[in-house]
Image (cartoon, rainbow, N blue to C red; front, top):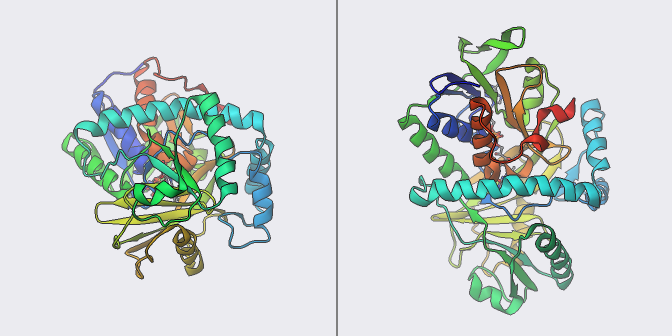
Length: 418
Ligand SMILES: Cc1cc2nc3c(=O)[nH]c(=O)nc-3n(C[C@H](O)[C@H](O)[C@H](O)COP(=O)(O)OP(=O)(O)OC[C@H]3O[C@@H](n4cnc5c(N)ncnc54)[C@H](O)[C@@H]3O)c2cc1C
């Protein structure tokens, strides 16, 4: 049990660190966020911005292993595993593969569903009065299909979502799609609209949220890197950073895809692999998209903004690779074009990659460091970190305050890897 007024240092200023800062500051804690680069400059910057409670199914589906195996022979696959002899990765892959069955998929989905529902409600409460410049759109998320086969396969998935989790969509016939969103061409097979999903411009949300937190007293220290810690038994006494030692009553590690190495300082083995994705941001052309859309047959997302739109996709397991190959960006374009009425603008305003923090069971890692009394982890949010940020921040706040958590945190506990 701790008291408001105590201090917390959050390591990592991505969307998860920001959300933790929000709930802790609101509860009366003195919060400092340290960030090795710029706040929300890593994976939280250029993502698709979907707040997607419809994304209940984990990556560990029965089809995932076949898809990964096929990618070995197809460098253009959206889901791609680059073979490499890294023992940590091979162990991760083995654990991931073991879970690619219907029973484990449904079990992970049930745990995801709980935190997705909580997060969607938290976002609604947070953004309804003040969207913080995030360009929050309550337009749902439209899954669009080019082929009858793709549409039929999704009908199965939609039925599963409805029957098991009460998540249902409105079906839109192919002929209606061009009226529904003027960016779509005629001749598409159809779509499913998940009306409870919403979207933001991710970089604007974090910018606005940070500004608001700063105004309420949260300190953000950029270009300050966590390098180690000193402890007395089970208590972290202080952390060592590139800006010198820093001390607080509590510590939260929220360092996304880089957490595995850093968690070792806290005495924990967290299995996180970077799942690399790309996005390009463009000015809106005539007949630009107005609805957030997913094109599952090509694994591409389209997010409209007030002043442009973004295409995002790919899941590459290739280690901590920072390159942005032109061929992958071109692939984003050529995957989206068959669905669109007008050609895409020729120039990209921004070309980006991000490392998603991927766990082998598709669940986030939220909870106390098993070996320490005053340190917590808030990481491993896979493909859903933006969506899951508020529920994560709320859980972390409740855990530090010693309150009863608003949802069962057990499935997300770091102790599951012991
Ligand atoms: C193409 C793409 C599309 C996506 N679309 C969506 C979407 O539509 N909806 C959704 O919910 N999610 C989406 N995601 C996933 C989402 O972006 C991530 O899950 C989320 O950004 C993770 O947030 P984070 O705060 O954990 O990590 P990050 O944003 O990576 O933040 C971690 C921070 O920790 C800092 N850090 C690391 N080491 C140190 C250190 N030693 N000292 C100090 N600071 C340190 C890093 O610099 C970084 O800023 C997408 C991802 C990609 C790649």
